[in-house]
Length: 180
Image 1 (tube, rainbow, N blue to C red):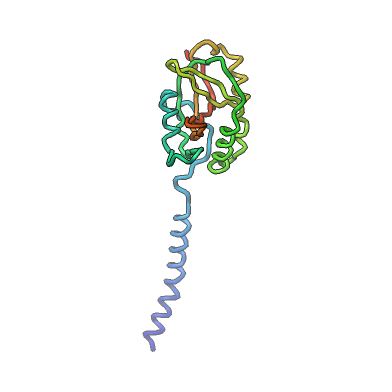
Image 2: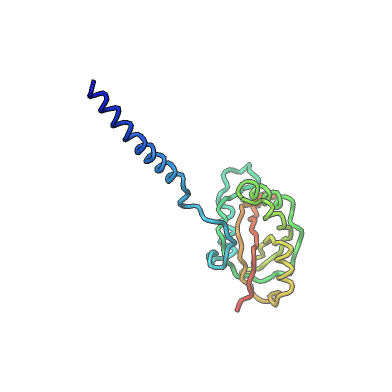
């Protein structure tokens, strides 16, 4: 019987220490070690590339011929150099739908992507690419000296849409910078 009392006494002393240890480990394990605060992208976040490369990347995720839209969670922020091709248009509904779907699926704040509503053609190596702008960014572009000169565009890719037999990349311009 004295052995049972010794065991019970030992458990009474060790149990609170073990409980505290396991609670500490559990709390520590739940601490987010990789989580970072969201912040706006800065120029250093964008990799240098070409419109041709980004457009090709935007269409890589196609799975089968029956699909009409490819949504890509990897934005691949890219800095490209191109020249305004003097064409603008309202963003087509199929592009706007892809942007909405992407935002609802992946964006922490889907309303951030709602203002992307104007498509603008930019030329790189003789080929025109239609890029989607926010009106506010486009207004700044109109006021700049970059209308007839090459400009650095900071863009993200969202995927692609299919029109007829042709796939079209959906690329959003987040900002621009005049070439110095």
